[in-house]
Image (cartoon, helix red, strand yellow):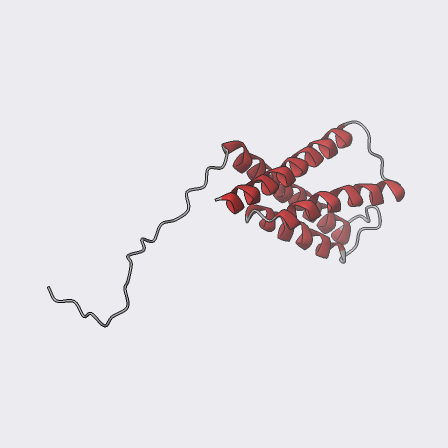
Length: 139
């Protein structure tokens, strides 16, 4: 086999994907966070639809469809492992509950339990997305 002495030297580079070791709990936390967001968005969608169609509930009107779209958009962002979306989802949920409390809603009994569950899942999702991104950087 003849080689051209005037060619630049070349090296074979294999297409190797980075093998990143990420704990299974990280994926579980992220999955639980976006599933909780989808559940929260679905409940919000039902409440907005009922409020617009039948009975006015806590001053909810058609503009709250944007809130529902925001929740589903952030859920998709968490599904894609976005740290920003995970943090915004947690902050949005806390601010929305605070707003509801300021405007006459009560947070007691079963609603308190569900609110704490959502905060827990969203918080774990924030931790999961940060741990995932850290592992990807280390690669």
